[in-house]
Amino acid sequence: MMRILGLRENELNKINGYFTCTEMINQPNLWLEGVKIIGEHKQEIQKFMDRMNSIKDLKIFLVGAGSSAKAASIVENYIRRVTKKEVHCISSTNLITQPDNYIIGDEPVLLVSFGSSGNTIEGLEAVEIFQERCKELYQLLIICSDEGEMVKKYGAKEGVLYIPIPPGTKGKSIAATGEFTLLIQYGLLLFDIQNYDYYKELFQNASRDAARFFDKDIYKVHSIANQPYDTIAVLGSNSLAFLAEEMCLKITELTGGLQSSQFHSVLEFRHGPKVVMNSKTLVSFFFSRDPLTMKYEIDMLKECSEDKRKSTIVAVSMDYVSEIDAHCDYYFHFNGNGFPYRDDAHIVFLYSLYLQSFSILKAVNLGISPDTLGNNAGGFINKVAQGVNIYKK
Image (tube, rainbow, N blue to C red; front, side):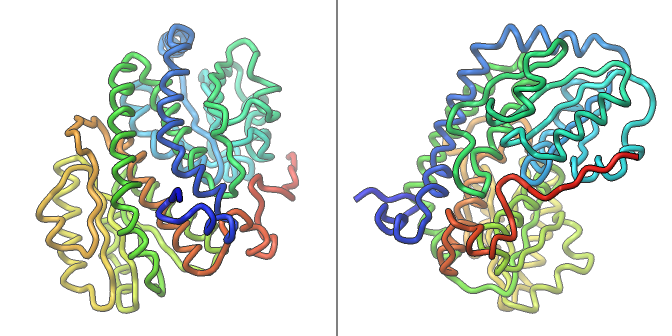
């Protein structure tokens, strides 16, 4: 019988976890389909981006909420380096409450909206705020569904670029899996379209590594998730700090708020938060590919290994590093084909497989059904946030 995340299909149906798990493991197929779609629209994208690059003093704003905001934050630094323009990443939940803090001056603006449904109230209000305050506004819609209000309202307008994301990306599970990684993929490819061939090869390699992870490494994730923890601490540097934040969000969502978690930058951890290792803690490290950054991260790993007490340490890196292997309890390393990944924003796709599968399996371990989380959490949360009132000055 077929296994999904190491669980039999009939087991998943019993625990109401089929949709969450199948959507999670389908991501490599979506990555390949996403590259194909972008390739089909390559000329259109290049024309739009050439126009944006030619606009003097253009400011780029990346806006989203929840997992979409984390996706935007992960690509922010890379987009800044590629475009050599002023780039600001703002959560729409912050923007609508204090727009004066962010929209300053009358320079031209490219508003990049990241979202799953395109129906989030804060996201729609963010567009209206920019329209009211900007003399010259352009939009890039990175939205997982063409059925939402944002795409219907703005997708075909002059000065707006919308490239469809593969059908099936927006899933039935409350937890964003493909809806998270596809937003990152499109954010990178749209702004870096001149390097299309690099990304095509990147995702071919990532898909092969993902198959190995689901076939072999998933059982190590089971072993980690089946242990009880007082809290889970997730650490990453720079762009990977936002991936750590996303892992904590997934753990909180999928366990119905029953599993405590916290995220920190790697170096920040020794400035107080490391005291959490006095309790039974799972500490997960997301290692950078940058050689300088990794030196600092390995120092922190060694320190945690020496002070681990009742804690369990998990390390995730792209290439195998013996020094990492020697100082952790569980080690996941990808890049079996030695692909030359150029930036940390390019490795989050494979790292996400660990964070998402762990979060799902921890929920299963706690007896929580991933597909019916709203009922498990007493109806506290919805896939698309509801109940938001919009107030005008």
